[in-house]
Image (cartoon, rainbow, N blue to C red; front, side, top):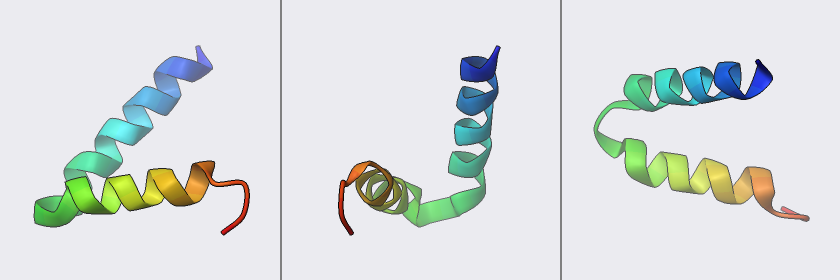
Length: 37
């Protein structure tokens, strides 16, 4: 299912980002869900 693929992708990206992954992930979430950047 598509949701499973998206969750797997998100987990892989999270592991790839390294030490600053929490901050980077929060920033990416904010940018991707904001109506205007």
